[in-house]
Structures are given as C-alpha cells and as structure tokens.
Amino acid sequence: MNICPVCGEKFNDNDLSSLSAHFLSMASSSDPSHVMWLNRYISTKKMPQDKLADEFQRFYDFTEGGLADWIKKRFVNTFFSKDPNIFVLEMQEPSKYTIMGYVTEHFHFLKQWVRSCAYIIARTDFRDIQKYELDNISEEYFGDGSRPPHIELLLQMGESVGLNRETVMDSKPLKKTENALKYWDHVSSSEHWLDAMVSMHSLELIADKNVKMYGANYSYFNPKILNGGITKETTQFLKAGYEADQYHSGDALRLVESYAKQLDMEREVQSYFLRSADYFYSYLEGRSERGKMYEKEL
Image (cartoon, rainbow, N blue to C red; front, side, top):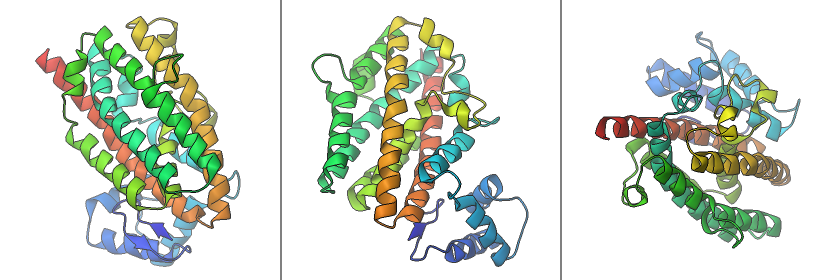
C-alpha cells in the first residue's frame, strides 16, 4: 500500500500506477496542492500517465543507498535546500522573538510527541521498538533523574529570553501547528505502528548535525550558537537536541528500514514519511508566525 503524500488517499498497490493516475487526475482539475507537489518534487512539465509513473518510480527508488538513506536525502532536499524552510532561515541568526515562537509551538509538539511514542509502544509487541520509544519518552518529557527532560530545557530557554512559562503552557497552538498535531495523533493512534514511527522519528533529522553530508545548504541553526549565543539556556537546549537527535533519528531509521523490509511495508513507509514531512514543514512555519506575533505584541 501507499498513500498520496498530499491528500492521504490510499492505494492498495505498490507499482505507483494508481498514484500517478491520481496525481494526473488532480492536476487536470487544477488542484493547487497536488500541482505544487508535482512541481516541487517531480517536474513542472505536463506528461502522460506512463511517463509520470516512470518519474514516480525514479523518485521512490531507494535501491542505491537503502530506505533510511532515501529518507535522509528527501528530508534534506525539503528543509535545507537553497530555498529552505523559513524557520530554518531565521535560525541562522535568530532573534529573541524567533526563540519565543520556537518555544511556544514546540511545547505543543512535545506534548503530542510523548503521546505518539506511547501509542507506538502500545501497538507493537517488538521489545526493541518498545524500549526505543520508552527511552524517548523519558528523555524528551520526564527525564531520568540525572538531568532535566528536553521539555524543561525548552521552557527554561523561553524564560531566558523573557517568555514566561505560564504564558507558553496556557497558550493554544497556532492553526498550522494544530493541523499537524491532529495528523500525527491520527497516524499514531489509527495507522500501523511503523507508519507512526517513520512519521515521527524522521522529523528528528531536522537537528542532525550531519545533514550537509546529504547535500544540505543549511544546518538547523548556525553552529556558532553552541559556542555562546543569545542566552546560555538557548545554547543548553539546542545543544541537547543537537546531540540527541542525531543518534535518535539514525537509530529510529535503522529500525524502520529493518522492519519495513521484514513486514513488506517499504513503499508504505516512504509515503507516510513524505506526508508527515509536509505537515512538519507547515508546523515550522507556525513557529515563525508565532515569533512574528510576539515581536508585534511585546
């Protein structure tokens, strides 16, 4: 099975002919979302269905480096190209308002994150998956007793730039964040646990320090921040994520690749990754929007 990375329609074949026919139909009716996706990832040229199917086949082909490598390259192309996500661009020289927007929207993201990890634990019997997700929950949300969890470091970062933690905790997510959270909650609670796993943990590639090995023009933030930038709490939070997400994403994608092959779900996993990445792209834009709101208000 695979799904449309734009609207989520499901197709019970793996040869991409149904998916290409679907895109051709949506493009013929001038659906803007599908047309934009084709223009960005496949081609701006019109083509017959058999040619489009061939292009999709090339796009989804992961035989050269494996599934995990394909995911990394696609993620880098989406978020770190010459035309990166607006939040990535802002994080090269972040203002205190950028950090405020980051803290507020990411607080809501982390609340969903722990639920998604718990759903994965509950919906699989594989102990290595359960252990991996349990460790994630502890590190991100509850801590291990020797160091604070990432959500506490996040709130401390906000306080260091003048954002009261009660303001963050009492806030409501912006629409782009809310839509993304609803999607991730649905995938985690209702779709296959492996689809949930790739949907959530591929997102940790955003802070992988090795993205330039995959052709990135930017990294998540300007590394000089780690040498003392904005506030020490900002450095502490970003450093924690920078160090953790590299091995989190790498470990998760190795597990995803292994189980996707074992369960014959490789094409399905690719599709869910692409759909989740689009929601994540919009969610990062929400961080930027929140920062601009704070700049006007404060």
